[in-house]
Image (cartoon, rainbow over all chains, first blue to last red; front, side, top):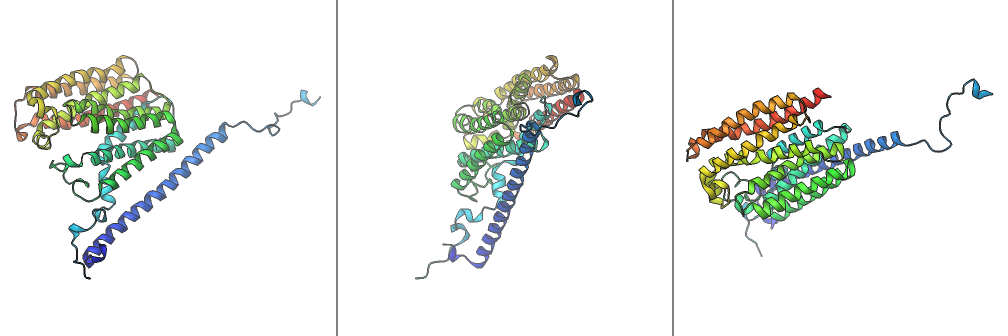
Length: 68
Length: 306
């Protein structure tokens, strides 16, 4: 059906299709940034709340008494 | 065999929808109010949320409101075509197929709820899903064409975003959140009925049972006054109950007095032609400012208390 379009009709259609594709591309790009941001924020919160693994805890500074 | 050349009119409808048509499907003007009230509720809610997650929550609320608006337009394309105010919307204007509009709306609905749940919390996601379903099923499909009280129930759909915004910060809902819900719920009838009074001819033509069409102008004006009388005490309740400070309380009292004065003016009006309905137009315009200032005061108050 579209094969019978006149040159003007085809040009109008292509302009609209291009603008739609560009908008879709921008939305997809924005979603990538959004998901990346969410991941960073959520992971940062998990890391901040996580307990250090067993055996890797930072020892308290030694006091004079503890050296004996 | 040569086929006859076709004109624009015979071309596939979707060939002519560009991004602006999809954006118009989201009812961006309605979205503005939803985003504003939800953002205010997020600021007023106790607790805090990471700014990026707060932005994500607002984005999800905006997209969900847009998706509900798109589903509404998909379902109401037939009556939109009959009203001057809505005849140029993408579906009645034939710029896209109903299937494209429905697919777009469903994808946005599911996507916004899923992202809200995964990124923020599932309580907020639950209320977001409820707000979409309520607007589409209870308001658009069930009540809008059946009862002149459609606007009252539809008001609840517009009020859910404050619950979603609150839940996004706190993970639950509290008395103040439900009072904010009640404020928008009770504000909606006077706001929309003021509009319906001077747009009565349009609704009548489309066969939508709006109160001025079914019960007449005088009855609608009494209902506006009644709902305004319920609205004003509810706006003051948060201050009386000690849930907000008196910066909000003072603003609510002052705005309430002006709102009541305008509602009384509308109740006393006997105008029957849209061009003579100055009081109704004034109330409609002021009602928008009223809600904006009220929620603005709520935010200012919570920042002062903090």
